[in-house]
Amino acid sequence: MTDTDVEYDESVDARGAACPGPLMDLIGKMRDVDSGTVVRLVSDNDRSLTDVPEWAAEAGNDLLAVEEGEDHNEFYVEKA
Amino acid sequence: MTEHIVVVGGGTGGTVLANDLADRLDAEIDAGDVRVSLINDDPDHVYKPVWLYVPFGQREPADGRRPLADLVDDRVDLRIDRVTEIDTDAKRLRLQGSPQSVGYDYLTLATGSTLAPEEIPGLAEGGHDFYSESGATALREELLSFTEGTLVLSVVGTPHMCPAAPLEFVFMADSWFRERGLREDVDIVYTYPIQRVHGNPHIAEWARPIMDERGIEVETFFNTEAVDPEARTITSMEGTELDYDLLVDIPPHSGVDLIEAAGLGDGWVDVDRHTLEAEAAEDVYALGDTADTGVPNAGSVAHYQAGVVGQRLASEVRGRPPTATYDGKTLCFVETGMDAASFVEFDYENPPSPAPPSEKLHWSKLAYNESYWLTARGLL
Image (cartoon, helix red, strand yellow):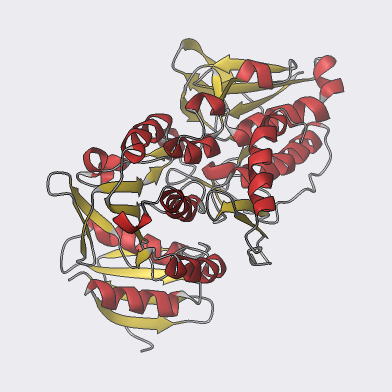
C-alpha cells in the first residue's frame, strides 16, 4: 500500500516518539473520536509498520492505507 | 547584576538540580552574582519508589517523605508556593500565594507527573493504585486481607512513572501469595496496552517467560475503556471484558496545565532531547517526567538530567558555551519477587539487557532506596 491519497479527519504526528509512543499516540487519539472518523498517524519508528496493523486488527478498526516514505510512514485508520 | 536561576518542582530532578547548582556555583552565589531559587508547592520532598512496598506492608508512606528544607543546600532560596503562570517573554512567574511575580534569567521546569484516573469512567471508584500515598495506603488495606479471587493489574495510562513498577508489582504479588500459601487461591492477571508486556521490547522479551512460568495471566492489546465497580469488570477498547475481585491500576498520567498555557508543549515540555532546552522559549530547560524526551519517566533519568542541566546553566551564567548533553542514560532495579531483583541500564543508543535476577540485586535496590536521600542532597 503506497502512494495513497486518503482523506482524514484527525492527524497525529508522532515523529520523534520512542517506541511504543507512536502506537500509544494513535490509541489516545482513537479514544477521543467517534465511529467512522479517519485518523492519520505519522511515525518515523519502523516498529509502527507491525504495531499499528496488529492493533488495528485486534481492535476491529480499519487500516485504510499505509503510505511508506523515506523518513517516515503514514497510517490511515478508521474507527469502527 | 545578579543572575536568577529558578527551578520549579522539588521532586528528584528539581532537588538534585538545585543542590548541584549550589555546589557548582558556590563562589558566584556567595559573591551575590547568582541566586538559585527552588519553588515547590509542598514543604516535603517525596520519594515515590517507596510506594511499591507499602501495599505489602513493608514500608510506610512516611518513609518516602522528608522536609525539603533538610535536603536543600542553604545557598538555595527555598520557596513553598505554587506557580500558576509562566510568561516566557517577560521571563516572569506568577505564584498562587503572592501578589508579586518572580523574574528569572534561567528557568528549569521539573513539575513532574500528576494522576488523572478521572479520564476513565469508573476507574477512581473501582480501582486501587500504588502511585500515590493515599492510593498505596488504601491498596494495603485491600491487599492484606485478600486471600482468594482474581487480582487484575491493569496498565491503563502510558507513559507512566517508573515503567518497571507494574511488572514488579505482579512479580512481588506472586511471590508474596506463594510464601503465604495462598497462590493457588489467587489468580493474577496483567494487562498492557500494546502487544507485549512492556513498552521496551527487550524488557518485554525478558519478562514474558517469567510471567508464563509463574502462572501470571497476560492480556495484551488491552486499552482500558471503562471500569464497572458494581459488577467488578474492566473492559477494553478492543472489546475484552475481565472480571476482577481486586483491581490494581496504573492510572493515566498528565503534566501540569501551566506548561500548555505557556505554549511549551502538550502538558510535557517539548525539548531537544540532548540539551534539554525547551524548543518554544529561550533560557528554559525541562527535566525528568516534564521533559518530553521519549525516555522512561524514572528517578534515575531525572537524576542524570539534573547533572546535565546543572553543567549547562553554570556554563551559561559564566558566559561559556554549555557542552554537557544527555545521552538517554536510564538505570532501574526491577524486583522479580520478594527477595530477588534484576537490573537494567540503557541509553539512546544501547538497549537494555536485564541482569539475571538475584538476591544481591534485590538488596542493592533496597540499599539504594535507603541511600536515596544522599542523591536528593546532591551527594551521591
